[in-house]
Image 1 (cartoon, rainbow, N blue to C red):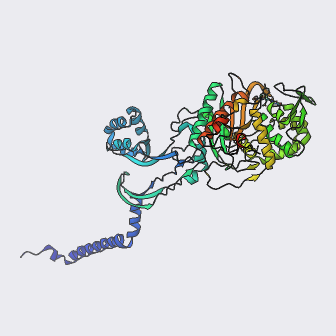
Image 2 (tube, rainbow, N blue to C red):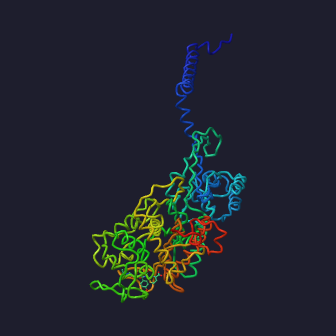
Image 3 (cartoon, helix red, strand yellow):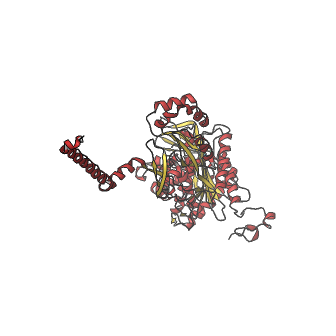
Length: 580
Ligand code: 59J
Protein backbone atom coordinates (compact mmCIF):
# COMPACT_ATOMS: atom_id res chain seq x y z
CA UNK A 1 0.00 0.00 0.00
CA UNK A 2 1.14 3.47 -0.85
CA UNK A 3 1.90 5.83 1.98
CA UNK A 4 1.73 9.54 1.80
CA UNK A 5 5.16 10.93 1.95
CA UNK A 6 4.04 13.58 4.43
CA UNK A 7 2.77 11.00 6.72
CA UNK A 8 6.23 9.59 6.73
CA UNK A 9 7.55 12.94 8.02
CA UNK A 10 4.74 14.39 10.14
CA UNK A 11 7.16 16.68 11.97
CA UNK A 12 8.19 18.28 8.71
CA UNK A 13 4.61 18.94 7.68
CA UNK A 14 3.91 20.58 11.00
CA UNK A 15 6.99 22.71 10.74
CA UNK A 16 5.94 24.09 7.33
CA UNK A 17 2.43 24.66 8.57
CA UNK A 18 3.77 26.39 11.67
CA UNK A 19 6.08 28.65 9.62
CA UNK A 20 3.20 29.56 7.33
CA UNK A 21 1.12 30.38 10.38
CA UNK A 22 3.85 32.68 11.73
CA UNK A 23 4.09 34.43 8.36
CA UNK A 24 0.33 34.95 8.17
CA UNK A 25 0.35 36.28 11.71
CA UNK A 26 3.21 38.64 10.84
CA UNK A 27 1.37 39.93 7.79
CA UNK A 28 -1.83 40.36 9.80
CA UNK A 29 0.11 42.28 12.43
CA UNK A 30 1.63 44.51 9.77
CA UNK A 31 -1.82 45.12 8.28
CA UNK A 32 -3.19 46.05 11.67
CA UNK A 33 -0.12 48.18 12.27
CA UNK A 34 -0.47 50.10 8.98
CA UNK A 35 -4.24 50.31 8.88
CA UNK A 36 -4.96 51.07 12.50
CA UNK A 37 -1.94 51.92 14.60
CA UNK A 38 -0.03 54.11 12.06
CA UNK A 39 -3.00 55.12 9.92
CA UNK A 40 -3.15 58.77 10.85
CA UNK A 41 0.57 59.25 10.48
CA UNK A 42 0.73 57.57 7.11
CA UNK A 43 -2.31 59.32 5.73
CA UNK A 44 -0.83 62.61 6.77
CA UNK A 45 2.43 61.73 5.05
CA UNK A 46 0.64 60.69 1.89
CA UNK A 47 -1.55 63.77 1.80
CA UNK A 48 1.43 65.97 2.37
CA UNK A 49 2.85 64.59 -0.82
CA UNK A 50 -0.29 65.19 -2.85
CA UNK A 51 -2.29 67.93 -1.08
CA UNK A 52 -1.47 71.45 -2.12
CA UNK A 53 -2.55 74.86 -0.90
CA UNK A 54 -2.98 77.18 -3.80
CA UNK A 55 -3.59 80.90 -3.30
CA UNK A 56 -6.87 82.54 -4.25
CA UNK A 57 -6.02 86.03 -5.51
CA UNK A 58 -7.57 88.93 -3.60
CA UNK A 59 -9.21 91.76 -5.46
CA UNK A 60 -7.24 95.01 -4.98
CA UNK A 61 -9.25 98.05 -3.89
CA UNK A 62 -10.53 100.40 -6.55
CA UNK A 63 -8.98 103.88 -6.66
CA UNK A 64 -11.37 106.61 -7.75
CA UNK A 65 -11.36 110.37 -8.03
CA UNK A 66 -13.53 112.44 -5.67
CA UNK A 67 -16.62 111.84 -7.81
CA UNK A 68 -16.22 108.08 -8.11
CA UNK A 69 -14.50 108.08 -11.50
CA UNK A 70 -12.24 105.01 -11.65
CA UNK A 71 -8.49 105.73 -11.67
CA UNK A 72 -7.13 102.23 -10.93
CA UNK A 73 -9.18 99.13 -11.62
CA UNK A 74 -8.34 95.48 -11.04
CA UNK A 75 -9.36 93.24 -13.92
CA UNK A 76 -9.15 89.46 -13.88
CA UNK A 77 -6.38 88.02 -16.03
CA UNK A 78 -5.08 84.52 -16.68
CA UNK A 79 -1.46 83.64 -16.17
CA UNK A 80 -0.17 80.49 -17.83
CA UNK A 81 2.53 78.43 -16.20
CA UNK A 82 4.15 75.14 -16.98
CA UNK A 83 5.45 72.13 -15.17
CA UNK A 84 8.49 71.77 -17.42
CA UNK A 85 9.26 68.28 -16.11
CA UNK A 86 5.85 67.08 -17.17
CA UNK A 87 6.08 68.89 -20.49
CA UNK A 88 9.07 66.76 -21.53
CA UNK A 89 6.61 63.90 -22.17
CA UNK A 90 4.75 65.83 -24.89
CA UNK A 91 7.37 67.56 -26.97
CA UNK A 92 5.33 67.03 -30.11
CA UNK A 93 2.76 69.52 -28.76
CA UNK A 94 5.26 72.34 -28.23
CA UNK A 95 4.95 73.94 -31.67
CA UNK A 96 1.17 74.18 -31.31
CA UNK A 97 1.62 75.75 -27.87
CA UNK A 98 4.15 78.27 -29.18
CA UNK A 99 1.74 79.24 -31.94
CA UNK A 100 -1.12 79.73 -29.49
CA UNK A 101 1.09 81.83 -27.22
CA UNK A 102 2.40 83.83 -30.14
CA UNK A 103 5.95 82.91 -29.12
CA UNK A 104 8.85 81.79 -31.27
CA UNK A 105 8.75 77.94 -31.32
CA UNK A 106 12.52 77.65 -31.20
CA UNK A 107 12.86 80.05 -28.26
CA UNK A 108 10.11 78.26 -26.38
CA UNK A 109 11.55 74.79 -26.83
CA UNK A 110 15.02 76.02 -25.89
CA UNK A 111 13.58 77.45 -22.72
CA UNK A 112 11.65 74.29 -21.88
CA UNK A 113 14.73 72.15 -22.49
CA UNK A 114 16.93 74.40 -20.41
CA UNK A 115 14.49 74.30 -17.50
CA UNK A 116 13.50 70.66 -18.02
CA UNK A 117 13.69 69.83 -14.30
CA UNK A 118 11.64 72.82 -13.09
CA UNK A 119 8.15 72.13 -11.84
CA UNK A 120 7.01 75.75 -12.13
CA UNK A 121 7.89 78.26 -14.79
CA UNK A 122 5.82 81.16 -16.08
CA UNK A 123 4.83 80.86 -19.74
CA UNK A 124 3.01 84.16 -20.06
CA UNK A 125 1.40 86.47 -17.52
CA UNK A 126 -1.69 88.62 -17.66
CA UNK A 127 -3.63 87.31 -20.65
CA UNK A 128 -7.29 88.12 -20.93
CA UNK A 129 -9.35 85.24 -19.54
CA UNK A 130 -10.47 84.41 -23.12
CA UNK A 131 -6.91 84.33 -24.47
CA UNK A 132 -5.83 82.18 -21.54
CA UNK A 133 -8.68 79.74 -21.99
CA UNK A 134 -7.99 79.27 -25.69
CA UNK A 135 -4.45 78.15 -24.84
CA UNK A 136 -5.66 75.90 -22.03
CA UNK A 137 -8.19 74.34 -24.42
CA UNK A 138 -5.25 72.84 -26.34
CA UNK A 139 -4.77 70.62 -23.28
CA UNK A 140 -1.01 70.47 -23.69
CA UNK A 141 0.24 68.26 -20.84
CA UNK A 142 1.99 70.32 -18.18
CA UNK A 143 0.38 73.66 -19.08
CA UNK A 144 -1.79 75.24 -16.39
CA UNK A 145 -3.56 78.49 -15.77
CA UNK A 146 -3.97 80.62 -12.66
CA UNK A 147 -6.37 83.49 -12.18
CA UNK A 148 -4.81 86.75 -11.17
CA UNK A 149 -5.77 90.40 -11.16
CA UNK A 150 -4.04 93.09 -13.08
CA UNK A 151 -4.29 96.85 -12.57
CA UNK A 152 -5.61 99.01 -15.34
CA UNK A 153 -5.45 102.81 -15.24
CA UNK A 154 -8.34 104.34 -17.21
CA UNK A 155 -7.01 107.91 -17.10
CA UNK A 156 -3.54 106.76 -18.20
CA UNK A 157 -0.89 109.45 -18.34
CA UNK A 158 -3.20 112.10 -16.87
CA UNK A 159 -3.11 110.57 -13.39
CA UNK A 160 0.09 108.54 -13.74
CA UNK A 161 2.27 110.35 -11.17
CA UNK A 162 -0.46 110.70 -8.61
CA UNK A 163 -1.86 107.16 -8.77
CA UNK A 164 1.43 105.35 -9.46
CA UNK A 165 1.30 101.67 -10.34
CA UNK A 166 1.71 98.12 -9.05
CA UNK A 167 4.30 95.56 -10.04
CA UNK A 168 3.48 92.30 -11.81
CA UNK A 169 2.64 90.71 -8.47
CA UNK A 170 0.09 93.46 -7.80
CA UNK A 171 2.11 95.14 -5.03
CA UNK A 172 2.20 98.96 -5.01
CA UNK A 173 5.38 100.29 -6.58
CA UNK A 174 4.81 104.04 -7.02
CA UNK A 175 2.47 106.85 -6.02
CA UNK A 176 -0.77 106.23 -4.13
CA UNK A 177 -0.57 102.55 -5.09
CA UNK A 178 2.57 102.35 -2.94
CA UNK A 179 1.65 104.88 -0.24
CA UNK A 180 -1.68 103.17 0.45
CA UNK A 181 -0.62 99.62 -0.45
CA UNK A 182 -1.73 98.13 2.85
CA UNK A 183 -5.18 99.68 2.54
CA UNK A 184 -5.64 98.70 -1.11
CA UNK A 185 -4.15 95.22 -1.06
CA UNK A 186 -6.47 92.41 -0.12
CA UNK A 187 -5.42 89.28 1.74
CA UNK A 188 -5.16 86.29 -0.61
CA UNK A 189 -7.21 83.24 0.31
CA UNK A 190 -6.21 79.56 0.22
CA UNK A 191 -7.68 76.61 -1.57
CA UNK A 192 -6.76 73.01 -0.82
CA UNK A 193 -6.35 70.71 -3.80
CA UNK A 194 -4.91 67.26 -4.47
CA UNK A 195 -2.28 66.94 -7.12
CA UNK A 196 -0.66 63.82 -8.46
CA UNK A 197 3.00 62.92 -8.70
CA UNK A 198 3.48 65.12 -11.73
CA UNK A 199 1.71 68.06 -10.16
CA UNK A 200 -1.51 67.68 -12.11
CA UNK A 201 -4.61 68.87 -10.32
CA UNK A 202 -6.79 65.92 -9.42
CA UNK A 203 -9.36 67.23 -6.97
CA UNK A 204 -10.48 70.55 -5.50
CA UNK A 205 -10.85 69.73 -1.81
CA UNK A 206 -11.95 72.90 -0.10
CA UNK A 207 -11.45 76.61 0.38
CA UNK A 208 -9.53 76.87 3.63
CA UNK A 209 -9.40 80.66 3.69
CA UNK A 210 -11.54 83.07 1.73
CA UNK A 211 -9.74 85.85 -0.11
CA UNK A 212 -10.34 89.22 1.52
CA UNK A 213 -10.77 92.03 -0.98
CA UNK A 214 -8.78 95.25 -0.56
CA UNK A 215 -10.52 98.48 0.41
CA UNK A 216 -11.51 101.17 -2.08
CA UNK A 217 -9.88 104.59 -1.94
CA UNK A 218 -11.38 107.89 -3.11
CA UNK A 219 -8.71 110.48 -3.86
CA UNK A 220 -9.17 114.22 -3.45
CA UNK A 221 -8.45 114.58 -7.18
CA UNK A 222 -11.23 115.80 -9.48
CA UNK A 223 -10.58 114.01 -12.77
CA UNK A 224 -12.11 116.86 -14.79
CA UNK A 225 -9.66 119.34 -13.27
CA UNK A 226 -6.85 116.86 -13.66
CA UNK A 227 -7.56 116.62 -17.41
CA UNK A 228 -7.79 120.40 -17.69
CA UNK A 229 -4.53 120.91 -15.79
CA UNK A 230 -2.74 118.25 -17.81
CA UNK A 231 -3.87 119.69 -21.13
CA UNK A 232 -2.91 123.28 -20.34
CA UNK A 233 0.43 122.34 -18.82
CA UNK A 234 1.32 120.09 -21.75
CA UNK A 235 0.43 122.79 -24.27
CA UNK A 236 2.53 125.35 -22.42
CA UNK A 237 5.51 122.99 -22.25
CA UNK A 238 5.32 122.45 -26.02
CA UNK A 239 4.75 126.13 -26.87
CA UNK A 240 7.65 127.24 -24.72
CA UNK A 241 10.01 124.42 -25.63
CA UNK A 242 10.35 123.72 -21.92
CA UNK A 243 12.03 120.75 -20.30
CA UNK A 244 9.43 119.93 -17.66
CA UNK A 245 6.68 121.36 -15.52
CA UNK A 246 4.18 120.89 -12.72
CA UNK A 247 0.75 122.22 -11.88
CA UNK A 248 -1.19 121.83 -8.65
CA UNK A 249 -4.75 122.89 -7.82
CA UNK A 250 -5.78 122.99 -4.17
CA UNK A 251 -9.04 123.58 -2.35
CA UNK A 252 -7.87 126.12 0.24
CA UNK A 253 -10.79 125.46 2.59
CA UNK A 254 -10.48 121.68 2.83
CA UNK A 255 -6.76 121.17 2.16
CA UNK A 256 -7.60 118.77 -0.65
CA UNK A 257 -5.40 118.54 -3.72
CA UNK A 258 -7.86 118.70 -6.63
CA UNK A 259 -5.29 118.22 -9.38
CA UNK A 260 -1.61 117.47 -9.55
CA UNK A 261 0.05 116.98 -12.92
CA UNK A 262 3.57 116.96 -14.29
CA UNK A 263 5.26 116.91 -17.66
CA UNK A 264 6.75 114.80 -19.06
CA UNK A 265 4.48 111.93 -18.12
CA UNK A 266 3.97 108.29 -19.14
CA UNK A 267 1.30 105.73 -19.80
CA UNK A 268 1.11 103.45 -16.75
CA UNK A 269 -0.70 100.80 -18.81
CA UNK A 270 2.32 100.31 -21.05
CA UNK A 271 5.53 100.77 -19.18
CA UNK A 272 7.96 99.72 -21.87
CA UNK A 273 10.58 102.34 -22.85
CA UNK A 274 10.07 104.35 -19.69
CA UNK A 275 12.61 107.03 -18.94
CA UNK A 276 13.14 108.09 -15.34
CA UNK A 277 12.38 111.73 -16.26
CA UNK A 278 8.83 110.75 -17.23
CA UNK A 279 8.15 109.06 -13.93
CA UNK A 280 8.95 111.95 -11.61
CA UNK A 281 6.03 113.36 -9.67
CA UNK A 282 7.81 116.69 -9.80
CA UNK A 283 5.18 118.57 -7.83
CA UNK A 284 6.28 116.66 -4.73
CA UNK A 285 9.75 115.32 -5.38
CA UNK A 286 11.48 118.23 -7.10
CA UNK A 287 12.60 121.18 -5.02
CA UNK A 288 13.35 124.64 -6.33
CA UNK A 289 13.95 128.20 -5.18
CA UNK A 290 10.56 129.96 -5.11
CA UNK A 291 12.07 133.23 -6.34
CA UNK A 292 9.70 136.18 -6.25
CA UNK A 293 6.62 134.12 -5.37
CA UNK A 294 8.28 134.17 -1.93
CA UNK A 295 7.66 137.95 -1.77
CA UNK A 296 3.99 137.20 -1.02
CA UNK A 297 5.10 135.51 2.20
CA UNK A 298 7.78 138.07 3.12
CA UNK A 299 5.31 140.90 2.51
CA UNK A 300 2.74 139.16 4.73
CA UNK A 301 5.36 139.02 7.47
CA UNK A 302 6.01 142.74 7.02
CA UNK A 303 2.33 143.60 7.41
CA UNK A 304 1.91 141.22 10.31
CA UNK A 305 4.83 142.92 12.06
CA UNK A 306 2.66 146.04 12.31
CA UNK A 307 5.58 148.15 11.05
CA UNK A 308 4.32 148.32 7.48
CA UNK A 309 1.07 149.05 5.67
CA UNK A 310 0.42 148.73 1.91
CA UNK A 311 0.69 152.46 1.24
CA UNK A 312 4.09 152.87 2.93
CA UNK A 313 6.89 153.58 0.50
CA UNK A 314 10.46 152.42 -0.03
CA UNK A 315 13.16 153.96 -2.19
CA UNK A 316 14.23 151.46 -4.84
CA UNK A 317 16.34 153.82 -6.93
CA UNK A 318 18.67 153.04 -8.72
CA UNK A 319 17.51 149.43 -8.78
CA UNK A 320 20.60 148.06 -7.09
CA UNK A 321 21.62 147.69 -3.49
CA UNK A 322 25.08 146.86 -2.22
CA UNK A 323 25.58 144.63 0.79
CA UNK A 324 29.29 144.20 1.34
CA UNK A 325 30.68 142.66 -1.80
CA UNK A 326 27.26 141.51 -2.90
CA UNK A 327 24.87 143.51 -5.13
CA UNK A 328 21.10 143.02 -5.19
CA UNK A 329 19.55 143.91 -8.54
CA UNK A 330 16.09 144.60 -9.87
CA UNK A 331 15.55 143.13 -13.31
CA UNK A 332 12.97 145.52 -14.72
CA UNK A 333 13.14 149.28 -14.22
CA UNK A 334 10.49 150.38 -11.74
CA UNK A 335 7.80 152.99 -12.32
CA UNK A 336 9.64 155.46 -10.17
CA UNK A 337 12.39 155.92 -7.59
CA UNK A 338 9.95 155.17 -4.79
CA UNK A 339 7.43 152.31 -4.59
CA UNK A 340 4.71 151.50 -2.11
CA UNK A 341 4.38 147.91 -0.89
CA UNK A 342 1.93 146.93 -3.63
CA UNK A 343 4.28 148.57 -6.15
CA UNK A 344 7.16 146.43 -4.85
CA UNK A 345 5.10 143.34 -5.62
CA UNK A 346 3.90 144.62 -9.01
CA UNK A 347 7.39 145.62 -10.15
CA UNK A 348 8.86 142.62 -8.37
CA UNK A 349 11.55 144.78 -6.81
CA UNK A 350 14.22 142.73 -5.11
CA UNK A 351 15.75 145.94 -3.71
CA UNK A 352 12.46 147.08 -2.16
CA UNK A 353 11.77 143.69 -0.65
CA UNK A 354 15.27 143.48 0.79
CA UNK A 355 14.99 146.85 2.50
CA UNK A 356 11.74 145.77 4.15
CA UNK A 357 13.37 142.49 5.19
CA UNK A 358 16.23 144.38 6.89
CA UNK A 359 13.65 146.42 8.78
CA UNK A 360 11.53 143.54 10.07
CA UNK A 361 14.42 141.11 10.50
CA UNK A 362 15.02 137.66 9.12
CA UNK A 363 13.37 135.88 12.03
CA UNK A 364 9.96 137.42 11.23
CA UNK A 365 10.09 136.07 7.70
CA UNK A 366 11.51 132.74 8.83
CA UNK A 367 8.72 132.20 11.39
CA UNK A 368 5.94 132.81 8.87
CA UNK A 369 7.60 130.73 6.13
CA UNK A 370 7.85 127.91 8.64
CA UNK A 371 4.20 128.28 9.71
CA UNK A 372 2.89 128.16 6.15
CA UNK A 373 4.94 125.02 5.51
CA UNK A 374 7.78 126.14 3.23
CA UNK A 375 10.64 123.67 3.51
CA UNK A 376 8.60 121.68 6.07
CA UNK A 377 7.28 118.13 6.04
CA UNK A 378 3.78 118.07 4.51
CA UNK A 379 2.83 114.92 6.40
CA UNK A 380 1.53 113.37 3.18
CA UNK A 381 4.08 110.56 3.19
CA UNK A 382 4.08 110.37 -0.58
CA UNK A 383 6.82 108.05 -1.92
CA UNK A 384 9.96 110.00 -2.66
CA UNK A 385 8.48 113.28 -1.43
CA UNK A 386 11.05 115.93 -0.58
CA UNK A 387 10.97 118.35 2.33
CA UNK A 388 13.06 121.10 0.78
CA UNK A 389 15.05 123.43 2.98
CA UNK A 390 14.33 126.57 4.95
CA UNK A 391 17.63 127.55 6.60
CA UNK A 392 17.41 128.53 10.24
CA UNK A 393 17.26 132.32 10.67
CA UNK A 394 20.30 132.20 12.96
CA UNK A 395 22.34 131.36 9.86
CA UNK A 396 20.96 134.32 7.91
CA UNK A 397 23.48 137.07 7.60
CA UNK A 398 22.55 140.36 5.96
CA UNK A 399 22.92 139.10 2.38
CA UNK A 400 20.92 135.97 3.17
CA UNK A 401 18.16 137.95 4.83
CA UNK A 402 17.83 139.89 1.59
CA UNK A 403 18.00 136.99 -0.85
CA UNK A 404 15.75 134.78 1.28
CA UNK A 405 13.11 137.52 1.38
CA UNK A 406 12.84 137.34 -2.39
CA UNK A 407 13.08 133.59 -2.62
CA UNK A 408 16.69 132.42 -3.00
CA UNK A 409 18.58 130.22 -0.58
CA UNK A 410 15.36 128.42 0.31
CA UNK A 411 14.05 125.37 -1.54
CA UNK A 412 10.48 124.18 -1.69
CA UNK A 413 8.21 121.81 -3.63
CA UNK A 414 5.29 122.98 -5.77
CA UNK A 415 2.89 121.43 -3.30
CA UNK A 416 4.43 123.41 -0.43
CA UNK A 417 4.15 126.61 -2.45
CA UNK A 418 0.46 126.08 -3.20
CA UNK A 419 -0.07 125.25 0.48
CA UNK A 420 1.61 128.49 1.57
CA UNK A 421 -0.57 130.54 -0.80
CA UNK A 422 -3.65 128.69 0.43
CA UNK A 423 -3.15 130.26 3.86
CA UNK A 424 -3.34 133.76 2.33
CA UNK A 425 -6.40 132.72 0.31
CA UNK A 426 -8.17 131.14 3.28
CA UNK A 427 -7.96 134.30 5.42
CA UNK A 428 -4.88 133.15 7.29
CA UNK A 429 -6.15 129.67 8.11
CA UNK A 430 -4.02 126.76 6.95
CA UNK A 431 -5.81 123.46 6.29
CA UNK A 432 -3.59 120.36 6.38
CA UNK A 433 -2.85 118.99 2.92
CA UNK A 434 -4.51 115.79 1.82
CA UNK A 435 -4.60 113.60 -1.27
CA UNK A 436 -7.67 111.76 0.01
CA UNK A 437 -11.24 112.99 -0.33
CA UNK A 438 -12.42 114.46 2.96
CA UNK A 439 -16.03 114.67 4.08
CA UNK A 440 -15.81 116.76 7.19
CA UNK A 441 -14.37 120.23 7.56
CA UNK A 442 -10.68 119.98 8.52
CA UNK A 443 -9.02 121.38 11.62
CA UNK A 444 -7.32 124.53 10.38
CA UNK A 445 -4.55 126.56 12.02
CA UNK A 446 -4.58 130.34 12.04
CA UNK A 447 -1.05 131.05 10.80
CA UNK A 448 -1.64 134.70 9.93
CA UNK A 449 -4.18 137.17 11.33
CA UNK A 450 -7.28 137.35 9.16
CA UNK A 451 -6.88 141.10 8.55
CA UNK A 452 -3.32 140.61 7.28
CA UNK A 453 -4.42 137.83 4.92
CA UNK A 454 -7.21 140.06 3.57
CA UNK A 455 -4.76 142.90 3.00
CA UNK A 456 -2.50 140.51 1.10
CA UNK A 457 -5.45 139.33 -1.01
CA UNK A 458 -6.08 142.90 -2.11
CA UNK A 459 -2.41 143.48 -2.88
CA UNK A 460 -2.09 140.24 -4.86
CA UNK A 461 -5.23 141.14 -6.81
CA UNK A 462 -3.51 144.44 -7.68
CA UNK A 463 -0.45 142.50 -8.88
CA UNK A 464 -2.71 141.07 -11.59
CA UNK A 465 -5.16 143.91 -12.19
CA UNK A 466 -3.06 147.09 -11.84
CA UNK A 467 -2.04 148.87 -15.07
CA UNK A 468 1.50 147.43 -14.94
CA UNK A 469 0.32 144.12 -13.46
CA UNK A 470 0.59 140.56 -14.71
CA UNK A 471 -2.44 140.93 -16.98
CA UNK A 472 -1.84 137.52 -18.54
CA UNK A 473 -3.00 135.93 -15.27
CA UNK A 474 -6.40 137.63 -15.43
CA UNK A 475 -9.48 135.43 -15.61
CA UNK A 476 -12.55 136.67 -17.50
CA UNK A 477 -15.54 137.34 -15.22
CA UNK A 478 -13.59 136.76 -11.97
CA UNK A 479 -11.21 138.67 -9.76
CA UNK A 480 -8.09 136.66 -8.97
CA UNK A 481 -4.79 137.36 -7.22
CA UNK A 482 -1.27 136.00 -7.44
CA UNK A 483 2.44 136.52 -7.95
CA UNK A 484 4.77 135.59 -10.75
CA UNK A 485 8.38 134.61 -10.39
CA UNK A 486 11.32 134.09 -12.69
CA UNK A 487 14.21 132.34 -11.08
CA UNK A 488 17.58 131.66 -12.56
CA UNK A 489 18.36 128.01 -12.05
CA UNK A 490 21.41 127.06 -10.10
CA UNK A 491 23.82 125.58 -12.57
CA UNK A 492 24.78 121.99 -12.04
CA UNK A 493 28.25 121.41 -10.68
CA UNK A 494 29.02 125.02 -9.85
CA UNK A 495 27.89 127.09 -6.90
CA UNK A 496 26.47 129.88 -9.01
CA UNK A 497 23.39 130.63 -11.09
CA UNK A 498 23.07 129.79 -14.76
CA UNK A 499 23.07 132.66 -17.24
CA UNK A 500 20.32 131.34 -19.43
CA UNK A 501 18.28 128.64 -17.78
CA UNK A 502 15.23 129.73 -15.85
CA UNK A 503 12.25 128.47 -13.96
CA UNK A 504 9.00 130.34 -14.63
CA UNK A 505 6.56 130.37 -11.76
CA UNK A 506 3.11 131.56 -10.94
CA UNK A 507 1.17 131.13 -7.70
CA UNK A 508 -2.30 132.54 -7.17
CA UNK A 509 -5.88 132.04 -6.04
CA UNK A 510 -9.47 133.03 -6.60
CA UNK A 511 -12.19 134.11 -6.77
CA UNK A 512 -11.40 137.12 -4.61
CA UNK A 513 -14.98 137.46 -3.36
CA UNK A 514 -14.43 134.22 -1.40
CA UNK A 515 -11.11 132.57 -2.32
CA UNK A 516 -11.53 128.86 -2.80
CA UNK A 517 -8.84 127.56 -5.18
CA UNK A 518 -5.08 128.05 -5.14
CA UNK A 519 -2.98 127.11 -8.15
CA UNK A 520 0.77 126.86 -8.68
CA UNK A 521 2.36 126.58 -12.12
CA UNK A 522 6.03 125.64 -12.51
CA UNK A 523 7.64 125.62 -15.96
CA UNK A 524 11.19 124.40 -16.11
CA UNK A 525 13.58 125.91 -18.65
CA UNK A 526 11.39 127.58 -21.23
CA UNK A 527 13.48 128.17 -24.36
CA UNK A 528 11.26 129.87 -26.91
CA UNK A 529 9.49 133.24 -26.78
CA UNK A 530 10.62 134.25 -23.31
CA UNK A 531 11.09 133.01 -19.84
CA UNK A 532 9.44 135.45 -17.42
CA UNK A 533 6.90 133.84 -15.10
CA UNK A 534 4.48 136.60 -16.02
CA UNK A 535 4.81 135.61 -19.66
CA UNK A 536 5.14 131.82 -19.54
CA UNK A 537 3.30 130.58 -16.45
CA UNK A 538 0.69 133.30 -15.88
CA UNK A 539 -1.38 132.36 -18.98
CA UNK A 540 -1.47 128.75 -17.81
CA UNK A 541 -2.73 129.90 -14.42
CA UNK A 542 -5.40 131.99 -16.17
CA UNK A 543 -6.70 129.13 -18.30
CA UNK A 544 -6.68 126.56 -15.52
CA UNK A 545 -8.24 128.92 -12.97
CA UNK A 546 -10.88 129.91 -15.50
CA UNK A 547 -11.78 126.29 -16.24
CA UNK A 548 -11.76 125.39 -12.55
CA UNK A 549 -14.13 128.19 -11.55
CA UNK A 550 -16.52 127.27 -14.33
CA UNK A 551 -16.42 123.50 -13.71
CA UNK A 552 -16.97 124.08 -10.01
CA UNK A 553 -19.92 126.36 -10.71
CA UNK A 554 -18.46 129.33 -8.90
CA UNK A 555 -20.51 132.47 -9.37
CA UNK A 556 -18.58 135.14 -11.30
CA UNK A 557 -17.58 138.12 -9.16
CA UNK A 558 -16.39 140.37 -11.96
CA UNK A 559 -19.05 140.56 -14.64
CA UNK A 560 -19.58 143.77 -16.61
CA UNK A 561 -22.59 145.74 -15.29
CA UNK A 562 -24.89 144.78 -18.17
CA UNK A 563 -24.37 141.03 -17.65
CA UNK A 564 -24.62 141.33 -13.90
CA UNK A 565 -28.35 141.93 -14.14
CA UNK A 566 -28.75 138.34 -15.34
CA UNK A 567 -26.41 136.69 -12.87
CA UNK A 568 -26.64 135.92 -9.18
CA UNK A 569 -23.51 137.37 -7.66
CA UNK A 570 -21.79 135.56 -4.78
CA UNK A 571 -21.32 138.85 -2.92
CA UNK A 572 -22.82 142.29 -3.43
CA UNK A 573 -20.90 143.92 -6.24
CA UNK A 574 -20.09 147.57 -6.70
CA UNK A 575 -22.91 148.01 -9.19
CA UNK A 576 -25.55 146.99 -6.69
CA UNK A 577 -24.42 148.42 -3.42
CA UNK A 578 -20.69 147.88 -3.13
CA UNK A 579 -18.64 145.70 -0.85
CA UNK A 580 -18.45 147.97 2.15
C1 59J B 1 16.03 136.99 -12.47
C2 59J B 1 17.30 135.63 -9.95
C3 59J B 1 19.23 134.57 -8.98
C4 59J B 1 19.71 134.28 -7.62
C5 59J B 1 17.28 137.59 -12.62
C6 59J B 1 15.28 136.62 -13.53
C7 59J B 1 18.54 136.76 -8.14
C8 59J B 1 19.53 136.64 -7.12
C9 59J B 1 21.24 135.32 -6.00
C10 59J B 1 17.78 137.77 -13.89
C11 59J B 1 15.77 136.83 -14.81
C12 59J B 1 17.02 137.41 -14.98
C13 59J B 1 20.75 134.77 -4.71
S1 59J B 1 12.26 139.56 -13.55
O1 59J B 1 11.06 136.69 -10.04
O2 59J B 1 14.75 138.79 -10.11
O3 59J B 1 8.14 136.77 -13.23
O4 59J B 1 7.36 138.19 -14.56
O5 59J B 1 17.14 134.64 -10.61
O6 59J B 1 17.88 137.82 -8.23
O7 59J B 1 19.81 137.62 -6.37
O8 59J B 1 17.52 137.58 -16.23
N1 59J B 1 10.23 138.39 -12.55
N2 59J B 1 13.16 137.70 -11.23
N3 59J B 1 16.47 136.71 -10.08
N4 59J B 1 18.34 135.70 -9.01
N5 59J B 1 20.15 135.46 -6.92
C14 59J B 1 11.34 139.20 -12.13
C15 59J B 1 12.07 138.63 -10.93
C16 59J B 1 11.01 137.90 -10.17
C17 59J B 1 9.42 138.69 -13.55
C18 59J B 1 9.65 139.84 -14.49
C19 59J B 1 11.06 140.35 -14.56
C20 59J B 1 14.44 137.85 -10.76
C21 59J B 1 8.70 140.93 -14.05
C22 59J B 1 15.44 136.77 -11.12
C23 59J B 1 8.24 137.85 -13.80
O9 59J B 1 10.12 138.61 -9.68
